[in-house]
Amino acid sequence: MTEKTVPIPARRRVALARFVLLLGLGGMAAGCSTNPATGERQFTGLMSTEQETQVGAQQHPEILQEFGGPYDNPAIQDYVNRLGQRLAANTEREEVKYTFTVLDSEIVNAFALPGGYVYISRGLMALANSEAQLAGVLGHEIGHVTGRHSAERYSRGTLAQVGAVVAGIFGGQQIAQLAGAGAQLALAGWGRGQELEADELGIRYMSRAGFDPLEMATFLDSMGRHAQLEALLAGRPGAADQFSYLQTHPPTGQRVEEATKAASTRPGGQWEVDREDYLRTIDGMIYGDSPQNGFVRGRVFAHTQLGFRFEAPEGFRILNGQKQVTAVAPDRNGIIVFDAAPSQGARSPEEFLARVWAAEAPLTNTQRISVNGLEAATGTTVANTQQGQLAARLVAIRWDQDTYYRFLFLTPQQAAGRYDEAFRDTTYSFRRLNSSERSRLRPYRIKVVEVRPGDRVEDFIRRMPFDDYPEERFRVLNNISPGTELRPGQLVKIVTEG
Image (tube, rainbow, N blue to C red; front, side, top):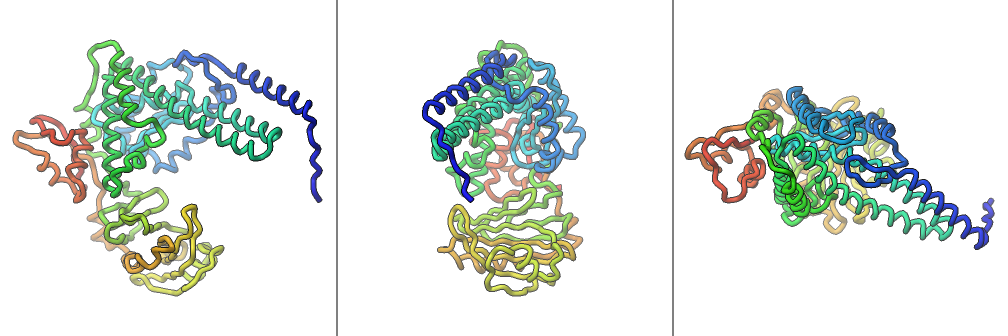
């Protein structure tokens, strides 16, 4: 049975369009208010301040779960909270109650939820070199809250969706889709402006609290150099923007320029930087992988708590995540995805492969294998992705009655077979860790040391556990420009195991 569509006469369409337009304009006018932080009229009518608090409180537990939870160091958590509250005391929105959390994540990141929930990663803290730099980051995230950017984006985004629906009524589905795409582009553009506004507000709050506002520009530059290093480590030196949490923000150079300009207009005074106290605070902090997520050591991934290890092929870069481990070939034509999955009652690896993991895929070449004494099964299929069809090999290894570990090996169809031997070696490198290996594997940590007369950069590089680009790592970690020598008495950060 087909639903009958009744056409709307042209005169009525025009009248209805005017009504919807007036309704939208009326709602926008009613939802506009002057933001006390920016002094500008702002449309946030579809998300009240009470709703902002509710949204933040609801999302907070999910954020903690997604990003590894809070870093288990009460002293550092207390330090960041005290600094954040000091900055928050200098803002215009007194009704906001702030919660500051250091996340147990090595990724250089910081963000805020509506309602005053502000997060920074220990990876970002490791990159910072003064309390003023950290204050600039926290001030920037507080600026997103006082600027009510989440409420503004939500309200304008909802209006954009309404506009798309109206366009659909009067112009058909194609126009509706175009309107939706236009709304997304508009929101992306507003996001860039909001980032610059958050920089400006952050400079205001850190300078009101007594911190040198130029340190924000210094740290923005440091984050840009860190992104370049990450791209270099990944074998993609020209793709720094893809290795920075700033990739969806205005270009780092633009933000440094704008932040420097804004900072130079702040009234002078005895600004605080507090480099030494900050470095002493983070001395001993975990650097890189958390023990809860396992360790990447060159081509080896080992998880001491779960008790296994495997080795990626030569040249592959291992990326450790919260829920899976990924290894990527230098030419990006070979990809390995490793994770764990419940058995769901499967009585054998073959059954798990066919009934649980790949129930919807046509498997071929299925066979039972043994991986260092562990029951396993493997098979091949074709995976349809946005990049086209990929040849896929699946390996399921039975760990215990309830758990399987899985390798998914992917290559483009035209490159199928190129990595067969390498993938096979990775499969059979999977094994249990012995007690000696478990005890030897320890997390990397930040160690703060003082430069003595005669010390050179090379002396500190030799104390760090990195073979690839060790000098670049040391200089980026300490924000020391290439060619710059060290000064006696200077405090520097190195990375040690233990």
